[in-house]
Image 1: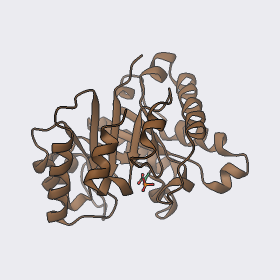
Image 2 (image 1 turned 90 degrees about the horizontal axis):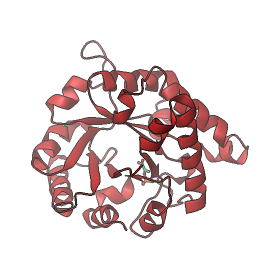
Image 3 (image 1 turned 120 degrees about the vertical axis):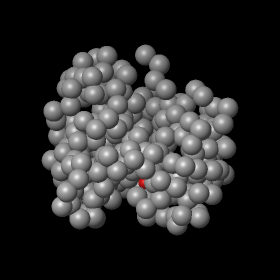
Length: 251
Ligand code: PEP
């Protein structure tokens, strides 16, 4: 099955409104005329609306970097799927390793975020990935197995059309250290096989699995040439319009 590539930019805690508008406009311009791949950007909550307005009419998907499972209520510091949609977004990232590591979000909380976002109709990118200690201790596959199974608990096959998995080895995020194409392919193949066990083979074949971890213009082509790599989740290089445009134009 041919899967449509997805290049996603995670802006993390960067950009004021002026910077965000400029960057979003550059991304929208950079992908005009390219329709064989999807492009997504995840700006900070504060500029979701500005960014959505800047890319309106383009094919750029706007996502939040996290999302709550509730529609509204006493959840200080959170943002609901309804708020994301009202601001012009249609997707959310959940389970980013920075949320797991710095803000101590666990698999069950991430699963609540994911299922809440799906129920509200958003597309969701579920991030998974092992730390260096887990990889070197031979626990990589066990960690991926747990994060994928628990992250997707309760999700049915129909909703899986709106789920994207991002394999992001923690040791490669923001470190300049990219997983080799062989290491990335091995993890992606494992995750795809696991999706086949949890759901069915056709779900495994249709689900996009992105690689994330120091993706740059210089390594995107070899990563995208791997059979189970369907796109990239890009942090640092997504803040530079020229780099991100080159990554979008992979191949
Ligand atoms: C990320 O933010 O998900 C990421 C992969 O960051 P970077 O590309 O900077 O490693």
